[in-house]
Image (cartoon, rainbow, N blue to C red; front, side, top):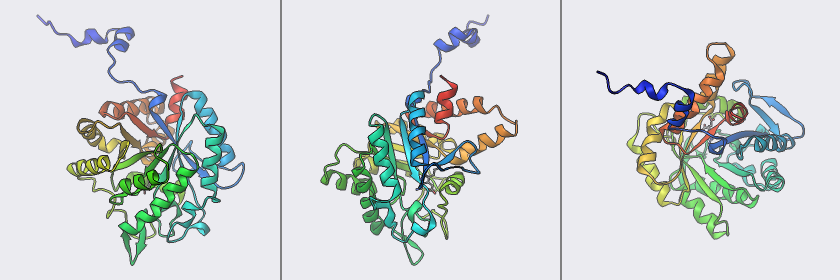
Length: 323
Ligand code: PBG
């Protein structure tokens, strides 16, 4: 006699829906957007089908379209022309530069949208590194000063969440301090806590033309082999005042998401990065995978691993598909 038949809880759609353990909704998603200078400009990222670099007027339209679909949080990244890049990322804190001007405009038009920004030098750096380079080395404390100016300039535009993605030691505390001293106690920090030196970022670097000009990012981003080290980063970011802890990438690091979920009471975010998007898109375009089905399954897996928040290039598409 078989008393236990787990299949009984799968016998109809109603019962399957009733016992469903994990749900993904548009509320959980953050949509990364690539911003370029100019007007009415839209260029597709070759390695990310369906994802475009947009000028600020088109970003405003995109934000509006997404808000109507229930996606309300956006992480804006600038694609900067080479002529504006330098060793100290000067444009990153120039209030007249197109990125900061666009942020202000977005918040003005959509005060109810939640806008996140990226703090790291790479989009503005002639070296293509997240930190300040001297004699081939990435200097930590000198970088903090630049990141601080960048974070302050972003806060001044009225944005909601700052996302330090640079992996310098001590940057969360440094930025928190500076924000508080300048009256920005309400600006949140979503720290890229466990950011691994990953091969999955390449399409993003295409999008921003921000690949390192020499070497790699292994002296600041984490070794993919390490798990305990994520706990050290999480502990420090928590002490330093982070409001969210992020794991990045997501899919090859679901165990890290799960680990931080168990060890921390803070909300855990996961970045479903560019390469993870591209793999699915490429296979779907070839007809090898059912793109929509795999997108849903992927986001579900990240949520099930323990992420509260998912940064994903699928955000708009997911919201459209599940409406
Ligand atoms: C840079 C940054 C990167 C991403 C977000 N911020 C790339 C990198 O570290 O080289 C990657 C995002 C993605 O691949 O989608 N500070």
